[in-house]
Length: 123
Image (cartoon, rainbow, N blue to C red; front, side, top):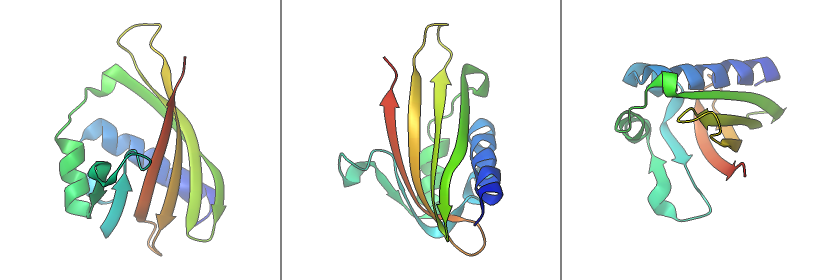
């Protein structure tokens, strides 16, 4: 995995979020992937397996015109990477941003096998 590969994956992540298409979401992850939304809380917010990740994403359809997001590689080492960025919901002009850090692991085909999301709300 190189920085450009990670940026492509992150761009695909945003595109899949916007489309909410199961195939597009599933293409990002390995069959046995682990996705932790808030790994510091408990295992209840950890989703295991591609099908479960797709189901979790598609159960909460969000209008892509109501949010914006940008993520970029921070570092890449072998099949592990860290990405940083922000997402903002556009309910009002003064809506705060969520600042994100993602700890990621990939297989040899560029699919994510481990995704741990940490976020901080801008005050």
